[in-house]
Amino acid sequence: MPGEPTEKVSVVDSAEVSLREWLGPGHYRPGDRLPPEQEIASMLGISRGTLRLALERLAANGEIVRRQGSGTYVGRVAVPAAFSEGLEVLESYASLARRQGHKVKARGVTIEQRRAPGFVAEALNLRKNGDALCVERTVLVDKAPAAHMRDWIHPSVPLPSLTSLTNLIERGAMMLDVVINSGVPVAFARTGVRPRLLEPGEEIGDALGVRRTTGALEITETIHVNDGEAVQYSIDVFPPGAIDLHVLRGFAGRELHPVNGRQAP
Image (cartoon, rainbow, N blue to C red):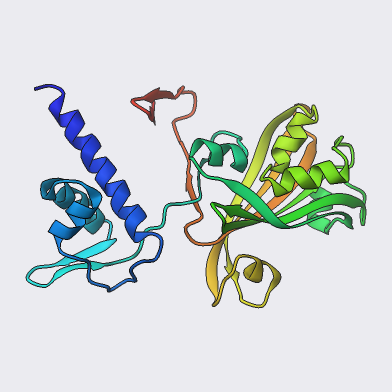
């Protein structure tokens, strides 16, 4: 029947997600042997045939290793990313999290006027050694540390009172949301992505709970208004697995249109 292939793919997709959620919280470590297929299928409430198809997908990604005559073992554990962001669209992480079903809060919130570093002053067109409001915190997604964020806001931006702003940030609001809701005509952002190392004992490493030298992703973003002036400079650091970045690219002059939930020329 025409509907059967779609239904089958949907069931396997669901089983694949369930397997990742089961492996993700840390019940197993790389190299651990998984229970027999019949036991896993019963636990997930799926058929063994569906389970095998889902396991094939995880095996193709290296998330599990199937050894004939020995069993199935955990490969690299794939933890679902806290954020999945397409850099083509300017959207706050709070908005992304809501769409992806995550709960966002912040801890260690510090909001104060600080002397802007030279590169920040240059980005925001501030005078040398000028001050700007700095908003710093550790962002928690579903109660787990997912990012360390530091935002510098241009003095011209109208903002809520310190108490109101602190409450908003602690409840998971992003400064991009606050700036837009303050009536600032945000138009575009210039984004940079680079790797960096986190060390235990350093401020950001401790904030994100790293216990050894760990690779991380740093995203810098300068937010501009319609006339091109910069109103916000952000430095966001994400530990491994916290963010999945994807970029849509096309030939110049060709408009891109969504096709079946994906983007295509």
